[in-house]
Image 1 (tube, rainbow, N blue to C red):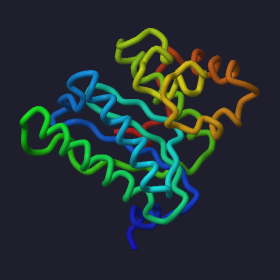
Image 2: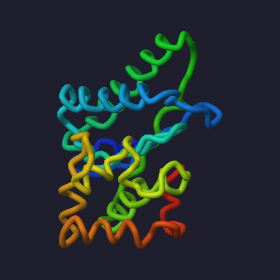
Image 3: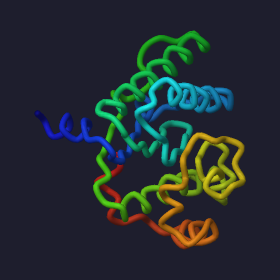
Length: 191
């Protein structure tokens, strides 16, 4: 059994799942596409009950999701259903053919609680670093608002991360202290 197959069959484990568009091109062309993807996440969570979304961020040309896998192969079933359905719907809607994503999604086992917390911060700060917003909670297509209690979506389960902090204010300060600094030590969890 390969290392990747072995860890993908790990139960009660956290994973960083991400992908980007072919040639770094957009995967979300208009606002409706972000909403389409999030609705597909919600529906897929109802169908595939073997995973929980811990955090996520959709960017114009890529996405990040932290998933908690409860049963063997839950992650692969979830991602297959989500990505294949999204690509088919976009291709049909904008009358295109071919690949939307660079390849199969990438997945990294998160084997350290500290990295889990820091990865959530990295993901939530993605739109700030890309100069799409000045505050992470203002990016509609991220779970940051769900963490802060200001978001409209209810997709992520922030209790896992927030349980490591005194309260939401403490987590917000953790996010803000990093805003503007480069994340060191995160390389093995990224593209």
